[in-house]
Every structure is written in structure tokens, then in C-alpha cells.
Image (cartoon, rainbow, N blue to C red; front, side, top):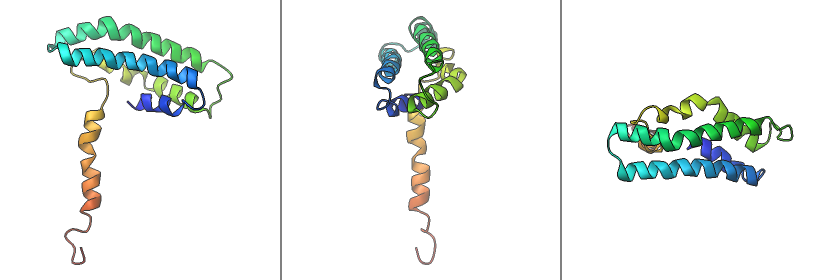
Length: 131
């Protein structure tokens, strides 16, 4: 999800290249949607990911590497930052291909953890004499 957000931010500077990246990522999310709706066993999920997701992921990272070699994309360009972010985390981004229990993103965890800092801020002075 974070990788996707970086490419969203790059849409203004490099719309065509960013759209290509987002299209590849969207394909992976479609596959995950099919898995959530139709598959329940770990071995089925793993086989389905290896058959359908792994080729897309490999093509995506090869494409990212090719784009990073282009001299006209400056390091300050948001698209360049998105490329760097994704390529630096290649191993971590591919974990879901080898473990059926690992989801493609951590959005559900981020939503669950969001209540902690919000509660801390909202209850900061709850037990003081002035609060």
C-alpha cells in the first residue's frame, strides 16, 4: 500500500509511467480479491499466488529496474522516489508470494494501530487535576 501511494504522488510529474506502475499493482490486488472470495486453504492460496501473482511481481520489478536506469528521471522527481522506495524493499514486498498467511498489504494492521496514538492524544490529561 505504501509503494502504491508513492506512485500516486508521482502521477502529476510522470503520469504515463505512474499509471503503468499502478496498473501492475492493481492486477495484484485483483488476484488477492479473487483469493479472498474463492480460496480458503493455505496450499491453494500459495499455488494461486505463485501461478498468477509471481509473474506480475517479477515483471513489475524488472520494469522498475529499467525505469531507474533512465537518465532523464531526476532523483528529486517523485517517480524516482517511488522507484527507489519499491526497489529498496523488494524482498519485503515479495514475502506474500512465499507465505499464504501474509496479506499483500498491512492496511488492516495500520487501521487497528491507529486507535493507540489517537487515544493517547485524546486522553493525555484525563487523570490530571486540571483535565
